[in-house]
Image 1 (spheres, helix red, strand yellow):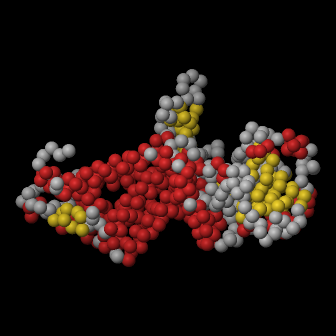
Image 2: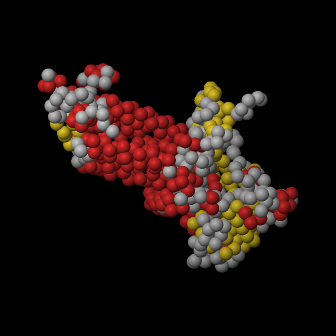
Image 3: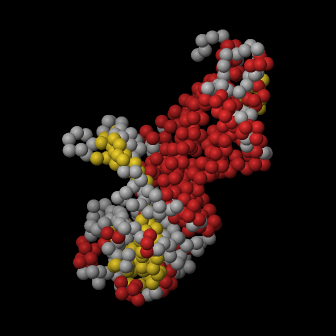
Amino acid sequence: MTAGPPETIAARTDTGSVSTGRAPALIYRHSVVVRVTHWINVLCLTILLMSGLQIFNAHPALYWGNISDFAHPAVAMTAVQPQNGPPRGITTVFGHSFDTTGVLGLSHDAAGQPWERGFPAWATLPGEQSLAGGRLWHFFFAWLFVINGSIYLLAGVLRGHLWRDLLPNRDQFRHIGRTTLDHLLFRFPKGEEARRYNVLQKLAYLAVIVGFLPFMLLTGLSMSPRMDAVWPQLLALFGGRQSARTIHFILAWSLVAFVLVHVFMVLVSGVGNNLRSMVTGRYAIEESRDAAE
Amino acid sequence: MPPNDLHRRKLFAGAALGTLLLGGCDRLAEDPGVQRVLASVEGLTRRVQRLLGGARALAPEYSEADLSPVFKANGTLDPDDEDYQDMAAKHFVDWRLEVTGLVEQPLRLSLDDLRAMPSRTQITRHDCVEGWSCIGKWKGAVLGDVLRQAGPRADARYVVFRCADPMDNGNPDSKYYESIGMEEAFHPQTILAYEMNDTPLPVAHGAPLRVRVERQLGYKMAKYLMRIELVDSYADIGSGNGGYWEDQGYAWYAGI
């Protein structure tokens, strides 16, 4: 499995770059609550996305307001049969139509047969068309996600993790330009600076934790007719049930975008070190260049 | 073995497990044990929603300006049933709503009987389980009034709605049915609607009578009502899950 001598691999995994020769310092970065809730969240969000797309497929169209104006959806995925040739998948966004055959509107089953459905089978849970099944998965993991998130938030507030580790300080804000430039050039902090998240990380994580995820829950609850009887304010907040459904959909894909960037940054900033810190809690700090050279 | 090599192996094992989980999801999804575990949160959702809003919380009501220009008709649009077609041809003058089961006084009510009762008119949003919504205006007799007239016995726990529409190619054994609990049945917005948007209920929307259960999804709101049956359990009806769609795997509690 390993090509070089074990020491080289070890050093590389620790620091995420070629070793400077000195053993890096291991710090305790992630508490057990953060680590466990993080991986449960990975499971929840994966299943919530796939079962959510299954539910969406039961009526692959989005609207704004309280009701569905079937003649004028904001977004719709359909299959059409041209006069000659095979059926096509068409996605319409604000009146503009795109041919999305193979992915949206029309995709193919395992035998290669065309299949009219919003999102393809590989993206949904269950893979077959099953609204009842999708709802079973979605609501079970929605509860798990809420309980898991509540534990994280409660621990984060009680132990100060949220303020201490995720709230940027004034100094960090002042250097946001420099941080952004470093980030874009993949220059990752070393030494003391690597002990904390940079301002962009903090803002991204905070936005997800206190913004996107809670609003995901609230827009989801707005679609529940019983919740609308309990808290009619939800409808006022999101501009109606169909608006809430549309926002739920947009937030879901915003979270997908966040996860893609997050995983990309994990990969390029020392995947072994990052993954170990989220498994064992230990994170290796490479000495800053000034000190090492 | 250096610790990080060990660590790598753990990661590979984790990735393999993840792939296995996703790949096996479909087989897992069909497993009855897994289905039971997943469905176990239904009661939790129902209890928490009741706890948060109380039993009497009202569904939002809208104004005439909010009415859907086109209210989508779903499910059965014209029952494939000879008796029903005969009644429809005669404008439902021979139609009677039976109230049976665990009641002191079984009832047989004509449309005129129902119209003579105090009515409730409400403009509400209809949410289909598929995801779409329409707003319509409904007028009907309050189900609670009808039930009080029949006098539910103390052991009555569910109200079962028996319908005229066969769901399986005209097979009379496959007629649509639904059920709700006593609390939902006595909710002030739960009505037996004979009018929609100021006209007699159209056939596509369940003529002559459909139930409105405004705090739940559309499939609870049975159309083509023939009989209301009070029971202590729905285990012996259909496949025993409390409704036609419930027997196809949908949740009995459709408040979400």
